[in-house]
Amino acid sequence: MLERGGGISADIMGPDLRVLDGIASWCGGLHGSMSLVDALGSLAAGFGADASVLSRHQKQQDRPRAVAMMDAKSDDAEAVTIRRPFCQDVMGYFFTKARASTVWFLSDHLSDGNWVSTQTLENWRATRVIEEVVVVVLAGSLRQQDYIEFHFARPLEYSEKLELEALVPTLVRSWSGRKTGLVTQAQMDDRMIRHRAAAQEHRLKPEASILGVSNPANLSRAEFRVCVMLSRGLSVKGVTEELSLSEATVRTHLRSIYSKTEVSG
Image 1 (cartoon, one colour):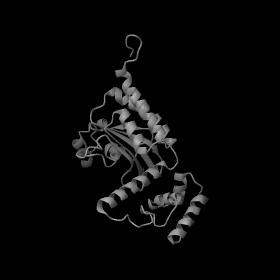
Image 2 (cartoon, rainbow, N blue to C red):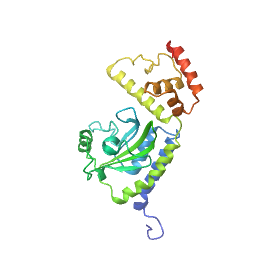
Image 3 (spheres, one colour):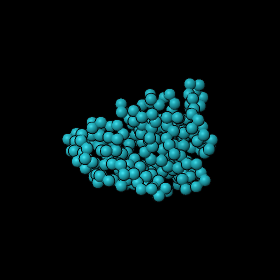
Image 4 (cartoon, helix red, strand yellow):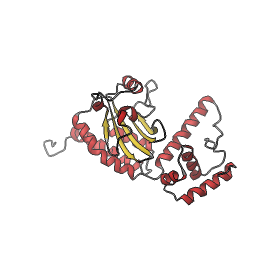
């Protein structure tokens, strides 16, 4: 819309500029220019979402695991903030059938007689007055699927839903071109932060396991990442695919790990 004098209305362009800025930050974060949490926060803010979760579901696991989370009320000590992914709760019986590049709106399911909500989702919606949840399937394979979800404290207009749907290909393409090992590194960083926080809160030493924060076996960064993925049930082939390494390189890391931990393969 043009104002008198040929200028573009700030009210019209404001939201669009915020979306573009959010997408730019998201793309940058996927290549390491900022933390994944900050990138997710910028993207969610651009969409006007109150909370957002990036998650990965390994097919052998019951539930998806958070990779990064953002909540607009994270600094509010009295607020209940998001702690887990809700993509499975929102998608219901579609969860195991959904294909990559598809988008799912909670509001569409509410009128579906075959869809059943979960108590956890209802508690979250009631506590934070969440009116809409949008889930995008970013990627999928026989082994795992990646999701991003946005939570809104207001209903979305039909035009807003169309705009979100139009941006799905951009989100999917940017995710497919992300920095190698980004998800694994984000999960490792989150795990270390949580362990350090727990140790400080309870005045306990970090666990002395091989994958403990203290890194008692003195594993290299690459060896530690290999151990993390193997502990989650991935095969050597799965590790090679995740890290884009040759099988020979992974097995070299394994030999070093066996030597440092004094175990055999």
